[in-house]
Amino acid sequence: MLLHFGLIACAEDEDLGAGTVDVKNMSVFTSISSVYLKPSSSTEWGSNRLASGYLGTTDTVTFTGLLPCNTHWDFRAYFSDSTVKQTSKFYLFCGGVVSFNVYY
Image 1 (cartoon, one colour):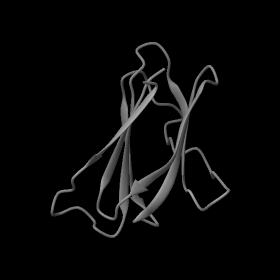
Image 2: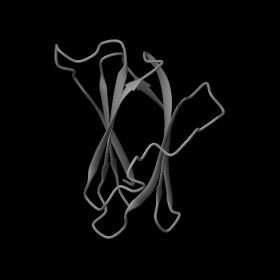
Image 3: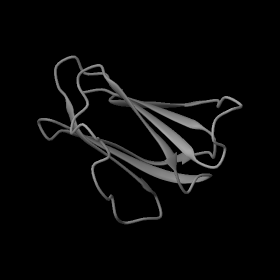
Image 4: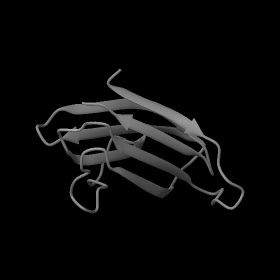
């Protein structure tokens, strides 16, 4: 499997008004150079969400405060060699966490 994601239950003290996405680079050789998230209803991917400019091998990054929630979203990641991994229409619950393990 090239891209795996799962849903994780939220803790009581998490913000129930927004969604969270965790992204883990499962590659031990290649960095992820950009990550994009957007509501599925949007045609615009927007800016690279990686503040550091890359996600190193076996590193994880968390994106919080994602709105709108309780709707479908799309995910796209580019590795440093331009390989793309993508999934469409995952459901992002308000207060929920979606975790992506991105395999090269």
